[in-house]
Length: 305
Image (cartoon, rainbow, N blue to C red):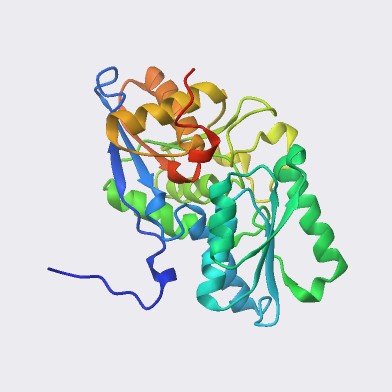
């Protein structure tokens, strides 16, 4: 029996499985749907990739030194990733999070030894961004502020990693890519590499349909602080997903395929189904950013429409 050895936990980030999703097969038999199972990363989400990339970029440039605290705003997953990588590398981590993020996310960040500062729940991720900027402005020499919404190392993680993996795992057969918009790093980095490989690959970005939504981790860009890394020229289409249908699909894929996923995975499934209605055939790849086990306290899997 072969075993895998890694020099440290961060070496296990990336190279996640590409899973076949069959829930739409009976209706659209000529559309193949696959999803990157990002909860296989050691921190449990796609954000492990960006966090490691930004921290190692800070080390290379000298912006991150042992005496500085890593600080950023986060709705949860990037914070967990910062906390994990920080613990593995010996850095103190301080995170600004909206007070209403799930209990599981708060507990995971704390388990890795990171400090949490809570921002106003009603102001969402934008409120956390404003608060972290204020904290850093008071004492800039004490912090390394990666700023996941502005840092090119965020999308670069997906340009170099996620997209390359997708091309290898599909043997270049991918025809459509669908991903949610939060920091926009996953969509931007992956789409850029895919379109360089083959300009005919269609890219569909998914955001909540309005500012008042329940899709934790996703941003409604028209009413939010737009990330500097966002590049709308890479999106062939940007679609707005309603909350309840996303919840329905997250529950459905858990109960029919054993894939326990979060809210944003339900949102991309909604967009994939919408896409399948128009293309009738193709190889569609999406990203399931995290597992549903960090949303159990939110009632996602207990709610019925």
